Each structure stands twice: as structure tokens, then as C-alpha cells.
Amino acid sequence: MLKSMTGFGRSVFENENIEGSIEVSTVNKRNFDLFVSAPKDWVGVDQFLGKIARQFIQRGRVSISLRIKDKRSDKGFCSDTTKMSAALKNLREFSEKENIEFKPDAELLFRLAVSKLDSDEIPYWKLFETDIQKALEEAMVALNNMRVAEGEVLTAELKGFLGQLKDKVDEIKGFIPNVVPQHRGKLLERLKQAHLDLDLNDERILKEIALFADRCDISEEITRLHSHFKQLDESFKEDEAIGRKLEFIIQEINREINTTGSKANAYDISERVIQCKNLLESMREQVLNIE
Image (cartoon, rainbow, N blue to C red; front, side, top):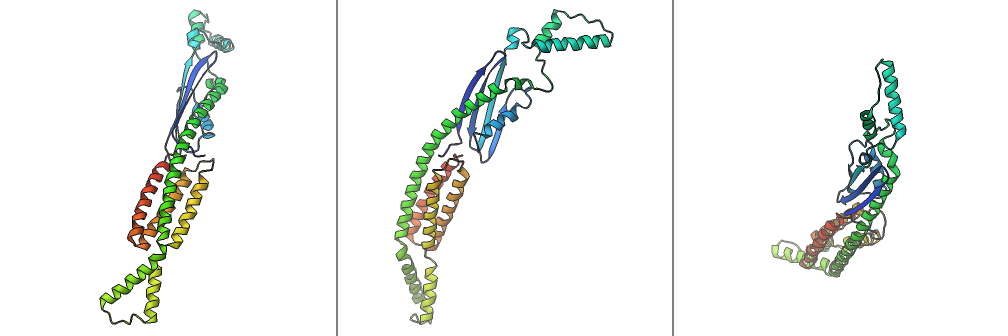
């Protein structure tokens, strides 16, 4: 199943201390490229979010926006009284050591209450790690649902282009029996017009003409094209990221089409070669949107 590289997902979460939202958006990018917007003092949360994102997305530019509202400041006190007590104890011990009079007042308690009092060992955001992870995963599911839906549309368009491409190559294949005889006839005609002192019935000359004419045979190119078409059909059924694989196959198809046009050098074939290249260009543009 093909996925588009474009999508959006959002989720919200809330507990007694914070409320927040996570938004995830993705756009086209050849490799995995992550950008995280989060509270500046939440050190390390970007790596945490990125690790989760990589489980859902293999290719594309991923933007994650984490917005947080700390509800403690609304309450006017710190919910963790244990940390407040520890802070007061440390201040009291320091005052006694420095022989400074220590008289806690309402202002000091208020400052302790509204401060985060984060531990140096455990970042504050880790207290809500489970909530954050769940919210991001929900946003990722919503994003991937959008990517899958758009991927189905892209798949249908690519299959349509591929069907037209197969028809054009089949038309080219129909001209193959006439290509070599036509070139042989053209070579003989040019030799006659050159008025060279050559015996055109000489077996050696006829053999050289035949060998030269055989170089315009495009049977091998047609066989390889059908092999590439089969690879594309099989790739559409895969569940993993195949954008790069499709780009490579289309590049190889384009190479064979160019060779077919240059070798055959016939108007009917050249006309269809141009049509094939136009179809390939349309396919290439769509493949750039696939993960």
C-alpha cells in the first residue's frame, strides 16, 4: 500500500499539572528530516518525540509542534510539596552553615510554590512521558490515515499512467517486424544513390548491410520494458516505503524508451516514444509524493 508523504495529525492531553497539544505535519523530502518545536526548558523531549516519529514515518520532512500550558501557575501553588520541603530544608541548612538568620515568610513560600523545582536528574517533562507518548501516537495515527488515503489516489493515477504506457509500448512492438527490413532497404537505396563502384549483389556487402540493419532491432528493449512494468505492478502491492524504488524503476524505463527511439529511428515509433516520455514525466512527478 503506497503512502503519500503529505499529511497532518493532532491530539490533545491533560492531567492535573499540565494540558497540551501535539500537531504533526509532513511534506515531501527525499530523506527523513525532523523538526521539533517544544518548550525551551524541556531538554531532551525532541529526541524522545523523534524516536517515536521514526516508528511511523520512514521518509519525508516531519514537523512536530508540542504546546504546553502549566496549570500549576493557575493554582498558585506547587503540587509537589515534597520538593518544597526539601528546598526549605536545604535553605535552612545553608543559612545555619553561613550563620545567616533564616525566617521563611509568605513571599518565600509563594516563590517556591510557583517555581518548577525541577530535578537535575529527572527532567520535568519525564513526569508526563506516558501522556506525551500517547498523544503523539494518536496524532501519528491520524496523520498516517491521511497519508494512506492520499496514497490510494496516487496509486490509482500511477496505475492509469502505467496502463497507457503499456499500450504505447505494445504499439511500438507491433512495428518491430518492419523496422529491420525498412532499414536494410534504406541502406541499399542510399548506396545506389551514391553511385559507388560496388556490386550490391556481393554476398559480403549484403552481409554487412544486414548486420548494420540489425542494430536497429529493439526487441531486447521491449522485453526489458515489460520486465520493468511487472516490477512496478508488484511494487504497488508492497507495504513498506517504496518511493525511491519507484523513482529508480521509472528512471530505467525512461532509459529503455530513449534507447528504443534512437535505435529504431522510425517516425511511427518516435511519435510513440515521445508519448511514452510524457507519461513517464507525469509518473515521476507523482512518485515524488510517495513515501
